[in-house]
Image (cartoon, rainbow, N blue to C red; front, side, top):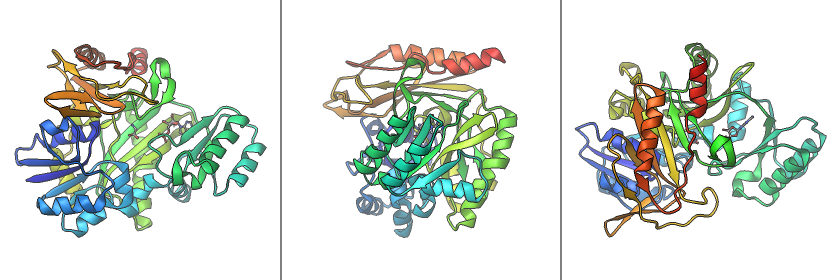
Length: 424
Ligand code: AMP
Ligand code: GLY
């Protein structure tokens, strides 16, 4: 089989490595891919948002199946365009990808169908939003740009002054572009966060092993928000009882709500949850695998990924026995110095003894036989083991064997999870 994967980060590398375990998979193409991906797939410099070029490429190579992994092409309708050209795809169509593409839609859906989430208001003008924020007395307050904003469109304002600044920068200065034409202002929730990725064909929903992201740049959850500096799986806060509640109160109601709206979701639906004192609530939906959640969840998947993806596409997920190993996984992201702000590219990466870990490439390029840094998040180093402490130890041992100038990584990935495990 010939497979096309749209995207070029660590998540796509994890998907490709997993798909490659199926011996039927002969050729993999990645658009645009990256340096590490180019060692196991044919990469072409076509951007993930160049939908017509993606379709023409897929048709010219007669690919048998496509996986559209990033948010932008999904929200723009890449799956619809490929399917119309006769190429079966894993991923939601445009009508369903709106669950991530518009926070206003997602909030409206949850309110209409009684799915637990933070209470909120929507504003289409800066004037009204400012008036509302002026009248509020409880802070922090959460302000979210409606559309996609590279994971940066959420501002937690500690004071009224910060809230007013945030509204102005999103709605008037348009720091996130058109995404800021509307904002959602919502209640600040507290509690541990859990990510649950799920496979769904619109009828059956199969949650994957739970995970925990570490979004801030620095140890102790300090510093700026990033795309994610590391992950662990499973998430010790996500007990069997919580899982049961999430299935009944959140997962199934979401799938049914999307069907009722004529927006059947097929693909990987990402639930960003907060476990509050009043029960689990949805912080965000994503219409795709998380990055770097995929880098800990997929290594634990025991069932063939391509079989699952084809069943999701064909509406036969109920026929597949999706199994995960009972091991634990830890992924440590190695980033360029300065990320998530300005950073330099083109630093040579050297690898020594890292045989016990999986190295996922996120922002790299291969030039004259040398692997160079080429992005903010450069590598994701994943280890699996029978227990979480061992997985963390192995991942950090492997990190020691990788180096490039200015490399920055958090030293405390999984530390919070270990505290919880030790209390149990
Ligand atoms: P997102 O980009 O939507 O994942 O949001 C980034 C982070 O902001 C989340 O991981 C949460 O830590 C935080 N956040 C988002 N919404 C809320 C909320 N209503 N209350 C508290 N924290 C939130
Ligand atoms: N790691 C969070 C995300 O993929 O949105």
